[in-house]
Length: 276
Image (cartoon, rainbow, N blue to C red; front, side, top):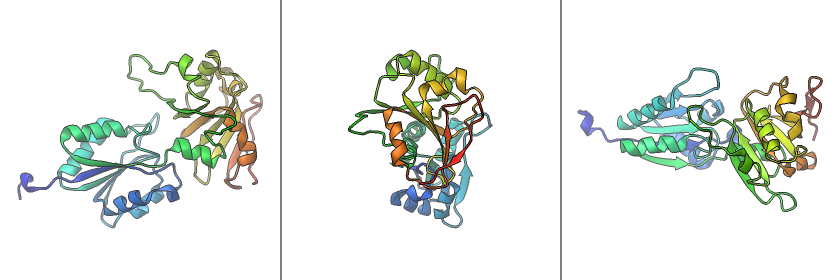
């Protein structure tokens, strides 16, 4: 059989959700179950892979800061070549593939290569992590707008695109993705741009997982001069805005959640088990 006789397959760009495997959509689970090949990222909960059929090929394409991984070009090549081999490919990405998931870049590569593709949206970690932390991103009393912002711009760009003098006031609530290593610098930018230093902030690690961690304080608490010795490792999302204060009364997730206070950094913070 010649290569020309092989009917091209299809690539599904699938949002695997924020971490809790129960938040996977029905359509996503059905597509994973039908896939010949599953290409998945670091932030995809391995429990999601239980939907894969026996014999499906699993390809890990995770990216972690400071660690070697497949380049985006290499990932694009895998998707294209697997589809050209006539296979149904499930490309699993944490959260939603079109919200800071580089799904747009992969879709462009598939279009250029003439590959059939489809996107299956997922619950964005920016929405879910806040919800699991008891923080509504909008609220009639305190927030009528919300903005999603990356905390990790492409380091190869000649000029950083975020104008913090504008972004600081772009919305009542700011949701900052991928910010574990940059949140102190971002806090400085926000304060310098006029965002009130006492604006409530929550930093959420492993949002929606059983071991979710929530760090709360105000912008001044996480400015570079104060948070240098307070190590918050990825993955993390920050919520900036008055809605964060609602967490005090809206925490619901359960006793397994760890809560840390950023208000006093002169001594190591102590984790407290949240009792709901």
